[in-house]
Length: 129
Ligand SMILES: Nc1ncnc2c1ncn2[C@@H]1O[C@H](COP(=O)(O)OP(=O)(O)OP(=O)(O)O)[C@@H](O)[C@H]1O
Ligand SMILES: [Mg+2]
Image 1: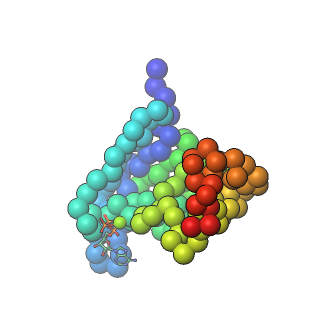
Image 2 (image 1 turned 45 degrees about the vertical axis):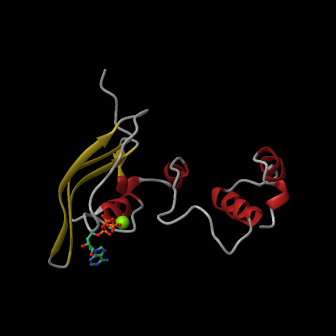
Image 3 (image 1 turned 90 degrees about the horizontal axis):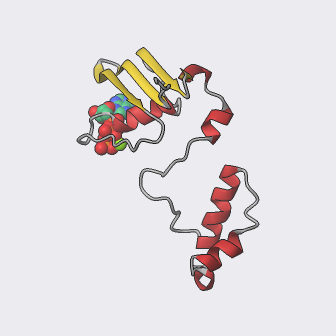
């Protein structure tokens, strides 16, 4: 049975002025799979991710998220996507507890269970670190 990929790019190209960065890029990620996206520095990985988050707009090709053109992606679609930031998932100048509160806010959840989670992870004593 054919299933719709969670995410697909088909013949996608993008240039910055005269510099062609993405050249007919195609791939599809199926539900339940683990997908690695590797390339040397400057290959265009971050540029590709920026097309998915719509920080950039492609010149040509088709991008589909949950089976619909990325141009029609809704806030609810983006709520279904997790992210680990480029450098670190933690802000070093914030405490462990503040980091958790920050991400709870970003995700639109209360964070009421933060004390419980800190206990479970054995981090309660270090919550102000
Ligand atoms: N806003 C921009 N304007 C012009 N050129 C850009 C811009 N953003 C990226 N580039 C160029 O596009 C190419 C791809 O950059 P990109 O950041 O996508 O690479 P990358 O695969 O993420 O690299 P790295 O492994 O270093 O993170 C590079 O040559 C980069 O200099
Ligand atoms: Mg990058």
